[in-house]
Image 1 (cartoon, rainbow, N blue to C red):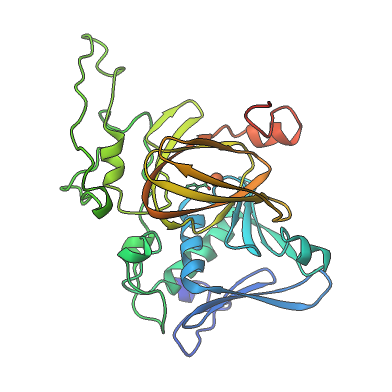
Image 2 (image 1 turned 180 degrees about the vertical axis):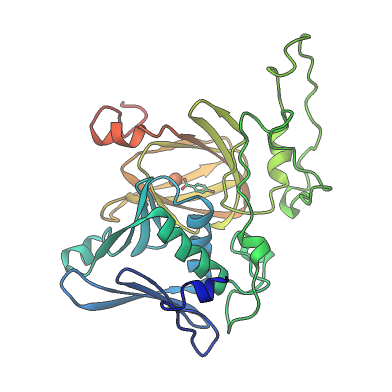
Length: 332
Ligand code: PHB
Ligand code: FE
C-alpha cells in the first residue's frame, strides 16, 4: 500500500501535482516556489506563514534525518519542532516574542511516529528529481517548479554513525572513491595519507587512529554531522559546511564547536524570544561553546570543516531543567 492510499482521507493533490498534509490544526501545502503553513491561533484566528520551498525542504530533511535532533529545530524564526524524545511539538510563532504576545502562536504535541510519518511523506512528495536537500546549492539542481519525479535515493540516506570509531573493524568504514565518496572540489589539497599504527600485540582493538581531514574532505553532504568517535555520551560529530545551516538550532544542552578549517559566521539569539545575543566569527582553529539557552545559525562562505561535540546523555536536558547541570560550560 503506498502513502497515498494509506492516508487518502487526509490528502488532496493540487494542480501542480503536490499533496497537502495535515497535522492537528496545522496544514502544509506547496506551490512552485513556496511552502505554506496554516494554523488556527490560540485566539481562533486562521493564520499562515510562507517559506521558500528550497529552505523548507533543506530544514525538513535535517529534522527527519536527525530524528528531531536535540531540543529545537527552527525551520526559520516562526515554524519548527521541539524534541521531547518520546514525543515532538510542532509550533508556529511560539518562540517569536511578537507573535506570542499577539496570541498568534500555536504549539501542538504529537507522538514521534505520527509527526515523523507525515514529515517523511511530505519530504518525499515535495522533493523533485535533481534536487538534493543535503547538497550545497552549487552542487544540486532546483527545488522549484511543478512536481517532477522524486529524489528518494538522496532523501533516504542513512546518517553515518560510528559505534566506537571510524575505521575500526566492523565499525563505520573510511570514505573512499570506491565507496562513492570522492574528494570534494573544495578539499583537493587535503592530504589523503593514513596514520601508521603500531599497537602492542593484544591491543589491536584498543589503539586506533584515522585521518579525520581526509574523511571530511570526502563528505558528499553539507550541514549533516556524522559520529566519528563515541566514548560513553561524548559524541564527536564533525561535518562539512557550505552556504547556510538550513535550521536555526535551539539548544537543550551545551554544545561545542571546533572550526577545523576556513570559517563560519554564527548568529546567536535567545532560544525563547529570538532576541539577538551574539555574532561569532569562527576562523580555522577557533573553539566556541553554544550555551543551553541559545539558538544559533551558521553561514559558511566556502566549504569548511566543523567539529561539533555533543554530550548525548539522555538525562542532561532534565538535569539542566532542574538546575542540577549548568547552561554554560564555564563561568568566568
Ligand atoms: C548545530 O545545530 O549545532 C549544527 C547542526 C548541524 C551542523 C552544524 C551545527 O552541521
Ligand atoms: Fe546546535
